[in-house]
Every structure is written in structure tokens, then in C-alpha cells.
Image (cartoon, rainbow, N blue to C red; front, side):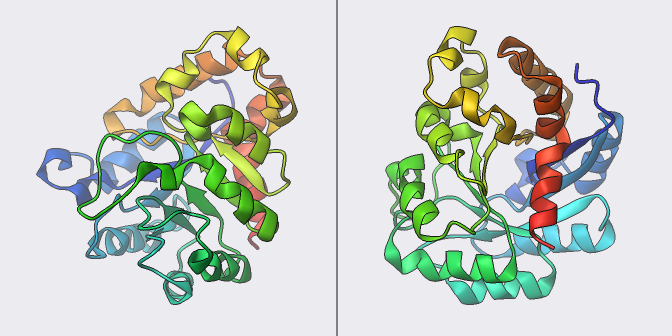
Length: 262
């Protein structure tokens, strides 16, 4: 079990917005569970609803609990544009969550989104890796691979990027990306990756150079938060993260991102 004083969770969802299946995963349950697990705050998004109700529920959450919740507005590249980014900023959202794009992340038509995110000082979490559920419109999973972030990182070095799930099966690309100053490895989910033997990480190019760039995220139903923390603690022990890097993972890098956005 992690022994830091507190955790900042940079990747969580208000699951109850997703339908009856998740009706017990309410905001009150999240806050209660966070308190039990020393989670100081959660960076919350509204899952993948197309009608905006998920974002509205997240907005209500951070307005009611501003010291415990930061809002991550849901952006769909290929559908949304810079105006949506400005709208989220005006509503008080902290950052943006990107998943299920209708075109590739690095499609030039999306450049205005990243430019506006820099202007508004909003960090951007990009989903990378595999998926279980798919959106109700034409979509290609390779549009979300970490290699679709290289051109964005090169064109917009000021953009604060969190590579969700550390790239999952594209872990090596994620490590290459994280060598950039403003790119962090969001370690939420990625259960199979975290179970890999230490030799896998030791033999991944640039892994040793980016161990200090991990930010902790849960991305689990609320009843699984405690076990996810334990799972990540075992991963950190397996790869021999230093005490300093552990503190950065549990909360330090999240605090760096917050400072970059002031």
C-alpha cells in the first residue's frame, strides 16, 4: 500500500452518467471512497455521452466541491473545435479529456483545439491504447495510438499532455513522448501492462529517463479504487521507483501540472 500523505487522481469518471448499470457510482460515493483512500482530489470527466449531460454533471460536481474535484471537459476531435475549449474554460473546467476521435489526433484540422488549450492553460488527457467499448459513429482505434501525438508534441511543445494508460500496448512510444517537458504518463488502468515483469520495463528504451514523469490515475468504478491503488503500488515496487519518483507519481506531477496552468 502506498504510504504518502495523499493522492491526486488525474483520471476518473462520473460513472453514474453512463446509465443504470453504474447507478451506484455517484459523486457522493466517490467523495466518500476518496476520503477512505487518502485521495485529495479527482480530475473528473463525464465518460463519453454525446448530449453533454456528462459534462454538466461534472460541472455541478466541481462547483459544489471545488477543493475535491477538477473538471475535464469531453472533447471529440473531428466534431469539436476551439470554441468548445473556450466554452469549457468559461464554465470553469480545468482541462480536457480526449477519446473516440472522429479523425486522427494529429489531423491538422484539430490544431485549433491544441492551440486554444495552450491559450487557456488547460492540460489535455489523451486516451491511448486498446478499448472495450466503442462510440456510436464511424471510428478507428488507431486514431488514438501514441504515435498520433508525436506531431502534436512537436508542433505545440507548450501543450500539457497526459498520455493515458502510459500508451498501454504502445508503452515504448509513450516513453519516448514523455521525454518532452510538458508530457506526462497517466498510469490509470493498464492492468496488463503493470503486471509485466521488471525485465520488460528495464528493456524498454527511455523508460529509465521518464520514471519521474508518471502521474497517478484511477479510471475505475469506485468500488475498485482501493484495489487499483494497491495494484499501482505493487507496480511501483516491481519497477523499483525511487522515493522521489513515488511522490511524483502519487501527487507531485499533478501539482506540477496545476502550477503550469496558473
